[in-house]
Amino acid sequence: MLCFFTDFGWAGPYVGQMRAAAAAAAPGLPLIDLMHDAPAFRPKPAAYLLAALLRDLPEGAAVCAVVDPGVGGARRAVMLEADGRKLIGPDNGLLAIAARRADRADWREVLWRPERLSASFHGRDLFAPAAARWAIGERPESRPLSDAPIGADWPEDLAEIVHIDGYGNCLTGLRADRAALPLPRKRTFADAAPGEAFWYENSCGLAEIAVNQGSAAERLGLSVGDPSPR
Image (cartoon, rainbow, N blue to C red; front, side):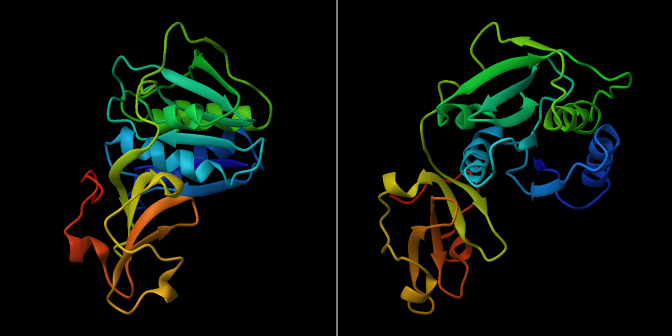
């Protein structure tokens, strides 16, 4: 399978164009929309989300990850094999936490380029077809990285809000077994009274702040990038 993780959102043609490019490169390959509302223009918080989501993907799965405010600039295109999962994206830290948490991580710079490469849409022209081909066993032309990737020095966990879902629940970049937040900890929503603010270990293993039948973002005034409550 090929999974997509982007900050594109669903409005406009971008997700469809990227999926079409992958389908053209590898007809019949299952395409999965893992996430298209990653933190816009923010590779760092997105990196912690991506790493958390990877744990539920099978070995051999490929991921086209695009949160790329530096598209068309000097940043490299990179590929990472992390515990058998294949990730392709920009060298801006987006893949760094996935590599950090893997037992086996192999970084390479992607050298392959398509005949047509727009300056502003590498997700469609470069990352999607390269990831699709790699998913079916055709590894794109590449070479080992000559130096450390961006994000190699980022912390193991990020004490910030990294995503707010449609209910107003606030996901942090902290793995739950390392978190200590100044709110009651609950196992799940049913253990909290209606309107009560709490935190719990979500299905991805992250500490998530919630209000039962309400919006934690509104109640606590939280936005993506804010420090986690301490």
